[in-house]
Image (cartoon, rainbow, N blue to C red; front, side, top):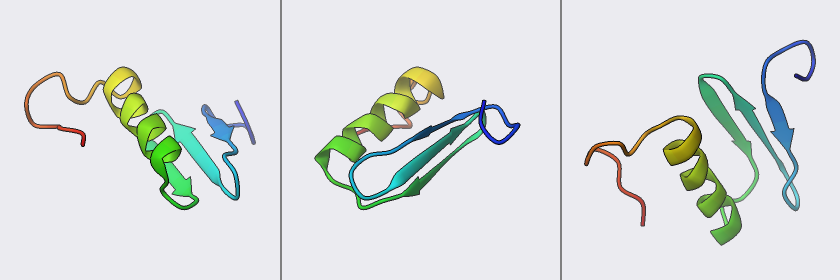
Length: 57
């Protein structure tokens, strides 16, 4: 928890990613590392991609 809320803050180079139960707030430039991490979150944490409606590049 942070600031009294469920979630976590991740600090990649030059920015921040706020991960909450129902949202992701990305405050940094998308590079390969950030994109890969967000794709992992969407698939493994938010359980998107269980069908063919979500594809990653």
